[in-house]
Image (cartoon, rainbow, N blue to C red; front, top):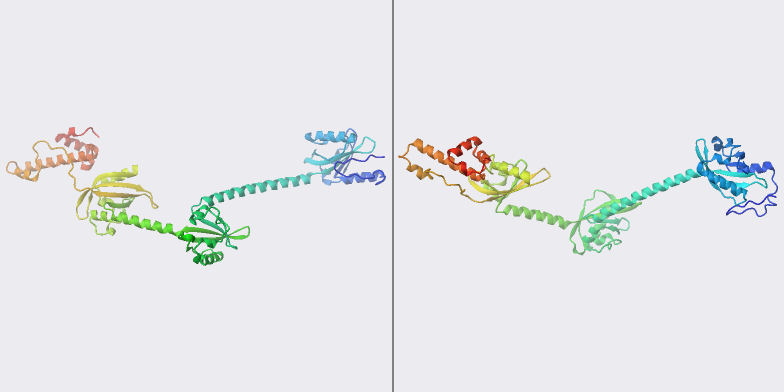
Length: 476
């Protein structure tokens, strides 16, 4: 009589000797062929004696052609050890268990799960196999779905981290409010600071508590209006605990099918204080005793204060705005270009001595300081101008008998011809102008020639003619 088959973790028939009774060979073969997708009748050595394939696709992979082959030769290299273990366990009568192997079939590897059991007292074995390709495909899809969910989860966590960081670092107070309950769901640190609340104490409270008691109904009405329209203008309400006025704006959004409101709270006092500060600054600049003028990159006047109008001898700011600064400032074609060059190279200049010419002909000696600053329309320049009065430049004494004043020149009448007097006075004026130019340019001959409007060679000739060659340190 056949021995009962030992199955691990499964219940065997309780009366195998009487149930199900003796089976004919054909019935047994049909039963074994129906149990799995493929069934092998094996010799004790593992040779395939017969094959029954119930899965048509396995026939296409060549399973039906393996009769006479060694079972171990039909599998891939990593599965050969499993075949040897299953054959040895079945021959020894050990409890049978399912093992998965991969067959090297046409069209790619085919995973099959086998159970090997001995047939009666003989040496024949039967291997019942189940095609695992559908299960493997399902496991692959499950793995891909799991990895996709993991990537989505990571992206969600990263987005949440960025949102939380921006929310907490924002300098503008922001509240997230449940539109149905009107309770605060989230509030950033700036909102807690504005409302003088401890960290986290605002969460869960009615949003109406952030404003003064008498204006809570106004806030609720404003929130209701923002739920039905997107273009509701901000409203200014008084905050609770005498925290001043604030401009509140609201926007509706949905989160997990729940309507939510995002409230932006801008302290109105800051804006008012900023405007007040700007007005005060403008008033200070207007009342400054030193002149101030603001020009664009082309030296066109943008604005100026009252002290500048006084220096230019113009009655109103309208006469100044739009004019060129060079109309009044510096020696034509010299000073202003030098000042602007220094500004563009260094960003600022300090206490540059020059002159300012008034519209009525007055001329004042001044000191000018300036700075370059960027603006929305390009760079602009700001200058402060201080009137230092008329200063007599210290120039070296003129040698010889050259006359020093008009009275001295008139004393020469009768002693010298008019032609000689004119030549003498011309030499005196030329010498004085050269000396003044050298002092003004710190003995720089090139700059002195530019100021005097003569060539450098002509200046050298005049220096030697007047005996002034030793007044300079070198041929700069």
